[in-house]
Length: 253
Image (cartoon, rainbow, N blue to C red):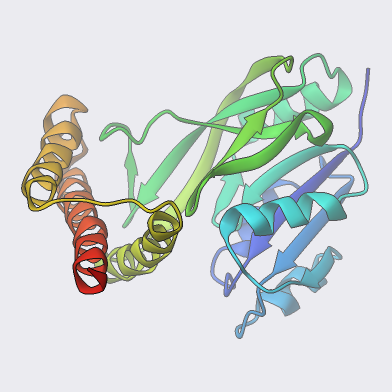
């Protein structure tokens, strides 16, 4: 059967990337819903120039914001994107084909990430499979903030679409480091809520294990200097996350 699709996007200060994202779904979206977290740049102006259904909602967490956005969609079949993502032409054609002949409850897409100008084909970053096209009656956003993921109903069927979902992640090392601090703060709050604990031994072992896994086991060295940076900063992020948790538990003991 053929279906109509609502493209759903959450935003916050996305003026640099939202245009290409919206351009990539032109012609296949029957509706575009953007839920913004009170951006202070030109995000709203750009979105409204595309005629999207734009609204603002206080940001509590990625999972909560994306589930809220789902409730605003007019159609049950949704394509959920991040503002820094865009569909390749091959993926556009695959989405259009799924829309014309919907046979599964959900579809997963291969995400290809651009890091400081380089496309990352290894480092555990590709193919970064993401369920993004789905029937919202059979799925919802879950996981652990800030690492959200689509949770499918037990009976839901899953297909695969050809083509890549392009992810324009970081434009600079500074942006990556800033994001590490931002995401580890979110992760800390989630770990506090779950009463998680850690140890000095974990601080010593987890970061180098992360580097070895990404750079050697997952062939990050084949991604050149970008792969080296990703492995180093990812291991640093692991250290920062658990160091924050360790100090939090130590100070309240």
